[in-house]
Structures are given as structure tokens and as C-alpha cells.
Length: 417
Image 1 (tube, rainbow, N blue to C red):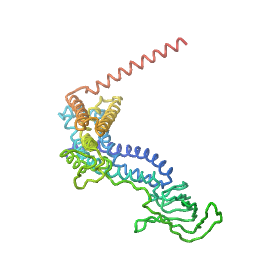
Image 2 (cartoon, rainbow, N blue to C red; image 1 turned 30 degrees about the horizontal axis):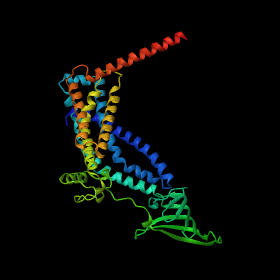
Image 3 (cartoon, helix red, strand yellow; image 1 turned 180 degrees about the vertical axis):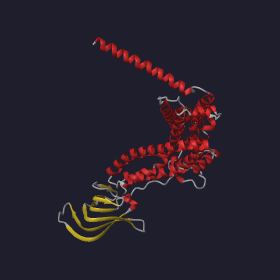
């Protein structure tokens, strides 16, 4: 690898990795607080919240990967510009296109990573997250039992435990109550308890060192039985279960989306009776063709967006030596955020059938690509101040003028007082 490419890689990669780590951790911690409130509030082990959070890692990486590459390239070019290395390279005949070559190689690698994330990691992760969310909010104790909360589950059972360990399956201080339709009441108290899955597929709560009490409302005399071990079976057929994967277009992998899309192009799409290609979940019949088209185009456009990041970041990072202005990162981040929101907005409109997906989504992509190309081309042809440097100067002049007017008004008001 040429020395110049290694030089730029050593400047780009550390910032890129640091950005990925910090941004992913911030997003995950923010989501973890919400998930902890959800799980604890529903009486489920807090470890389920961590499981749910990790299912969203592909989604977070997909969001921060372009951002990491953008900041890595931007700060690399800002560093060489502040040290006057950029102008030295220009004087030596090194073009801006040659300088970003190593960053383009990184973006190509990122393209394959993005396709893996949006095509396979995110769909499976989203389904597992939805499955765990359904289990938590519908009282399915297969996910474990949390501490100090009364958990009601189908079958008339109410369960509360004082301590919960091993993902909510090893319990201490267990209380179980059940009221039958005929008014028969039954309670269990035990020092220890354990949730066990049997080979038959049923779930058993094994209670240890406890008492079983039975009585009715009209006959308050209680029947008390002590036990060392008592198995309390739960009929899982009475519990609510989440649907199979494929009921949402976001849960379909890239190849499944492509096969369904091609099948829809060959014939009239009927969400209730379409013949799906082999290997596509049957639940995909419930999805409208507009949703399939929008999701496929949005994923492809988003994955290819990472190829534009080096050409968008480099012009924003070039600044004058000893300059203290820092508008490049702010403008760049706002531009990327606006671009992502526009893709999301057009994707939702296309999924609802209000706008055509193939034109609306790719129109946003092409517009961003053209603006990026124009910015990069005009910067590469400039020998002194770059177009963005001129924008920074104009912005600084406007800010200075406004600041001076506000200062003079405050001084006049102070003099009158």
C-alpha cells in the first residue's frame, strides 16, 4: 500500500472507530433505560432488557457507520489542513481525488458491511426484539420473572417473587395465587422456586420448601399441606404467542424482499392470495406490495449512501491554517441528518402507497449525490479558499454583525438607565 494511503488511513480509522463506539454506546444506553422501565414495570427480569437492547445493535451500527466514516475523513482533512500539509500536497501535484482514495476503499468495505446489516442483521434482530417485547408486555413467563412485582398470566395465576436470579428463572420467596371459576382459591408459598422447560414443551414452576393452602369464599376453613418439592405446570397453549417472522416488511431479509418484489412485478399483487416464492415466510402475504417496494429501495439507497461520505466530508474538513472555525462538522452532521430523515420520510410515504418508491427515494439519493459531487468538484478546482471556506467567512460576518448590533443595543439601554 502506498505511503500516502497508509498516512490517511492512520488518521481516518481511529476517529471512525471512536465515533462508532461512542455513538453506539450513547444510543444503547438511552434505549436501555426505556427497556428497563418496560421490563421492571411488567415484572420481568431486567436481563431481558439487555437481550432486547443487543437485538438492536445492527440497527444502531447501520445508523452510525456512515457518521463514523464522515467524521473520520473530515477530521483527517482538518488536521492536515491545520498543519499546512494539505497545501504542500497540492503544490506537489497531489489532487484531492487522490487524497480521498484510501477513504473510498474504506467506504467500499463499509458498503458490504451495510448490506449485511440492513439485509440480514437488522431484519432478524428486529423480529427477535418484537418477539421479546410481545412476551414482556403480554405476561409470558417463559422470559423469566422479575422481582417484587405481581405478575398476572393467562390461566388465572398471579405470581410474585422477592428475589430473581439467572435471568428470572431461579427464584426466592415465591408466592403464587389462583382463583378458579367455581370460587376455589389456591395459594402457594415457597422459599425457593425454579422455572423449567420440559421435553414435552410445557413449562413447570418447581417450588421447594413451601405450603399449599386451599379454601373457598363460603367455606373459610383452610386445607394446608406442606411440601418439600411441588411442580406447578403451566399450559403454554393458553398463553399468547407472537406471530412467525415475516408479518412486517422490515423483518424480511434482502433476498426475500427481492424475490417477493420480482414476484409482484410478474403478476398482480394480491396481499391475501399471492403465491410467494420458495423460502419467503408465509406471513409476507399480509404485506402490501407498496411496502415491499419501499423497503427494498430504501435499504439499497441507504447502503450506497456510505460511498458518498468521503466526497462529502473532505471539502468540509479543509480549512485555513490556524483557523478556529468549526462549522464543517456542524454543517455536515445537519446535512446527513436531513438526508436520512428525507429517506425515512419518502420511504414511509412510498410504503403507504402515496408516492412511487422508485422515483421518490432515489430522487433524494440523487439530489444528495449531486450536491456532494458539486461540492467536491468545486473544492478540488480551488487553489486558495475553498467554497466552504467562503461560506464560513460569510457566516462569520453575519454572526459578527448581529453580535455587534445586539451589543450596541444593550449598551444604549444601559446608558439610558
